[in-house]
Structures are given as structure tokens and as C-alpha cells.
Amino acid sequence: MLPLKEATSIKHKVAERMPFNARMFSGLLSKDEYLFHLNQQLQIFRAIESKGLPHSSLKRTENLQADIILILQNISTNAGCAGWLYALSLFVPLPCSLADSVIRVHNFLFNLSFR
Image 1 (cartoon, one colour):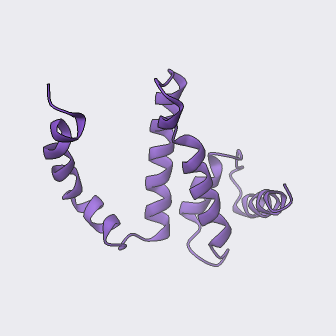
Image 2: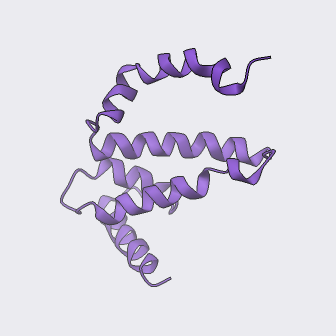
């Protein structure tokens, strides 16, 4: 039996060369694209972690959530809002109205800074 690193090396190389991943590793993704990616990863790891992990060092959801929050705190409200509103919706249920959403975003971020 091969060690894990050797057994998965070919698949890792293929994954690294996929167009999206190449753009991400080159720093070419927009903040909206990166937030969307982090949200997808968050959903995947939430599902995996809900079934239990063999070791706590494999947990990823807390770090993903922290990354999302950090990005949200650094995005200007004048920037493209689709990605950060989508990302925030994973933490705070958002209403349909954009004005209401912006208020909820503000309150959410404001409360984060005082925890």
C-alpha cells in the first residue's frame, strides 16, 4: 500500500491544473468568486464533519467561517455585493430586500467586532 501522499499525487496534480484552481493559486479570482468558493468548501466540510471525523485536526468549518468573516469585514459596501451577501446568508438568514440585507450585514459585522 502506498503512503497517502504518493497515492494521491497524480489526482492532486490534475486538480491543481484545473482552470479555476490555476486562477485561484495565481491570485486571479475576484473577491466574489473566492467567497463563492469558500462557501462551497464550507458546505462540503459541514456535511463531512456532521458525520464525524477520525481526528479533530481534520476540522475545517471553523477556519472557513473565519476566512469568510475576515473577507466580509474587508469588503466595501460599495463593491459588488452578490458574493458577500451570499456568503453572509450562510450565517445570517437574509430577507429578499437588498436594503434590509445591508442593514442586517451592518448589524452582523458590528456585533462581530464587539464579541
